Length: 344
Image (cartoon, rainbow, N blue to C red; front, side, top):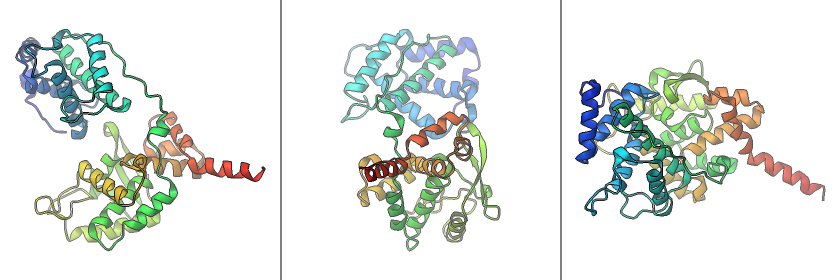
């Protein structure tokens, strides 16, 4: 992640407390966010390995909380953030559930999963304030989502996956790149962050192996199929004509004057994928990037029927995490109900 804040500004515990209190009293949002970043770098679980995407998401959530606590149209704060209780955070959560975020000009109620992410960010914000000895950490629980995880985040059905690959032809360089990204997620099981951060030096075509850096900086070796290795080889030849000198990332932007040849971002890849889904008329439940990883997990489990192999290939520390792919195996369920019909 790199050093994003002057860490020396927060080294002294007594000064840290005074700066945090002053920032809260003056409603200095940027200073409070600086404290939070310093805490994550120095004390957070991932420390310097925290991804910029996670940090950006946390900042959106904290800004939303501060916008709620400090409504600009009100003469005073709704909540003294240094004295906030679990009840105060429950009221903020209720607003997110019923009205939506406080930074969006046209808000809509947030889903439980999004609220849980927002709450995780604000909890880390209060851990930073507690580190500064400026506040205590309010005790609050995120609302439960009644929909099971395997229903909220389904895998892409095989026929839709094949339709997507057929749509992404080799005739157009951007489609060629997107097809490779889809296969890296949908067959090798990489996360979108792992795809966009994959370096040329981590691709070993001769061995058909990828060296992947996953969550928390954990590294794993991912074997790839022969056809995927061949597709990677074709992309590498095309990439040479467009990549900027010194660009180390495998996937690069194509088109556009400023970004052409530079490494692709998660945001750009997500936008590209959703454009393809819309063009193909996929139902809204089959949008997003992570469903491709779920597609890979489901396929791996269906072929192996082994949760340990599934966990190993996907980089799950706990084999129980991979159990969700057994529940996502809709093809197996369809096969079962069809066999049942034969008995009638």
